[in-house]
Image 1 (cartoon, rainbow, N blue to C red):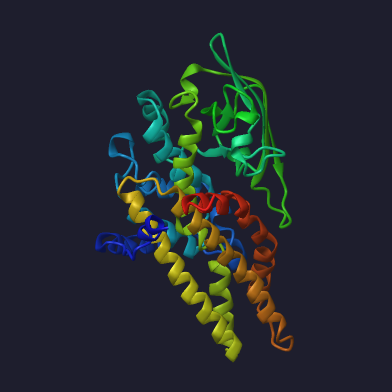
Image 2: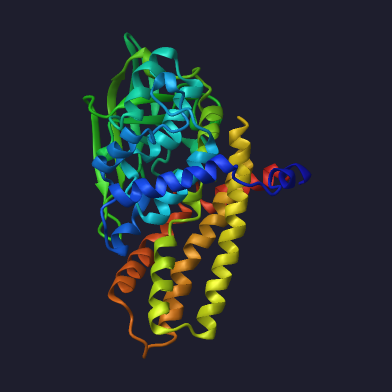
Length: 385
């Protein structure tokens, strides 16, 4: 318990990171096309390869990767600021998002020199988009039960199985897949490895999954005896579990776990400025503000550990869990606030943005690990199980 509390001691972004914020805002004022709130609310689900390439030209894709591979070599604090500003503006970042946040840092830490030389410069130029192959049918967030298998063969490995809920697989060039290379699903974490899978290879089929909003950012991916070369293995065979946990610390800790509904919140407040705040409206805005400030402080504390080169797996799980609750609470509470005064006119932009977030917000507690899985990790971190 004491160790976990120590991880969340109050931390602040350093002055150079705050100075970077002005630079990011100036870039967005010039390069981000105006869009309606319902479009901006999609933000890290919004796919725009041209915008990602503009960011890459500025040096802001692969921001924390070494300059020798084309990255900017900046710290995790400046990436926090960049992400915070992109999400607050509702920028469409899905094209480069996973490669920048997870795949690039994973390869930089565990990849061979040949893998780094090939993939990292392409990521930093906005030319290589990645997806993550973790969840499987009938497994969900129980990653240790994966059944997709890579078997050694002449010339490399043969990959067979299925992945599901894979974000933007139908638009990605590569997948980093967690698969079984030895043992059986009952062996749990033992025998798991990670591979870089070129999604254009024969034997791979990708089926987009349409959600309630009509968008299709998830996919199901099937591997039918796909030949992978030996050099597609990431790290050591059988080390996939440790590697994927390090990767998930990047995924779960950032401001994207707090800001998914922030465009809706801004749109609602802008509407209230026109129609007037009731006492209950003002109370709700105050509640949201204090919660966001607290959650942001927790996220900055985790970022501080990442900047030190640590892997705050349990701390990131905690931020993701309570951050997700906050993100899901916003559309539900605003929906109730709007319904409480049926005589008050509802702005069309607010109505469309609210409709989108109300439909998509249930997925917030699925992506990046379900609430049940995260709370199990937190309980183990606290020594409760």
